[in-house]
Amino acid sequence: MTTTREPDTEELVRRARKGDSSAANRLVVRHSARLRRMVAVRMDRRLVSRLDPSDVVQETLIEALRLLPDYLRDRPMPFYPWLRQIAWNRLVDLHRRHILSKRRSLDREVRLDLPLDEPSAYQLVELLLARESAPAARMLREELRYRVRKAIDRLSPEFREVLILRQIEQLSIEEIAAVLAVPQGTVKSRHFRALGQLRELLDESA
Image (tube, rainbow, N blue to C red; front, top):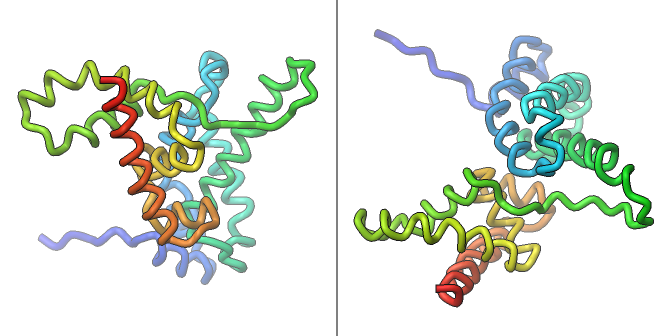
């Protein structure tokens, strides 16, 4: 039985540029799961009780379809980092509206590098234990989960960001380079050093 190959992102981009509306819709929707994970990780915990990450994703997809012709014309960056930026802007707007608007502080800088949620902490634990034997890994998981969450907050901002982008959001090196506007070599170096610093912090807390 012959199976139909699902077109990749670049192929959908080419079709959409030629006016294929179906390709445009598929292009935007195919990344919805990645976007939801990003939103769930980045959304301020104070907003979770009021806003569902799925709603933010849906609004992002609608906005992306509206802006897609401009993207297809200019291609300023790879597709997913462009789509992610729309979601990021939406999160920043929600943070300003629901969190900062209730403060009297003159400081209106928005930071979304928040503490890791439980699923994210578990993902990093699995990464760190990938080379451990099964029995040792089982014994270490619960202990490491707490320590990982504490250690990640002690990383330098640039190391914490690249680690979350790579391991939690699961962006490629090329996508991270586009998001951070740095060379791919810089991304690789930061990621390697971030993992090293994280392990050192975990050793200190052992």
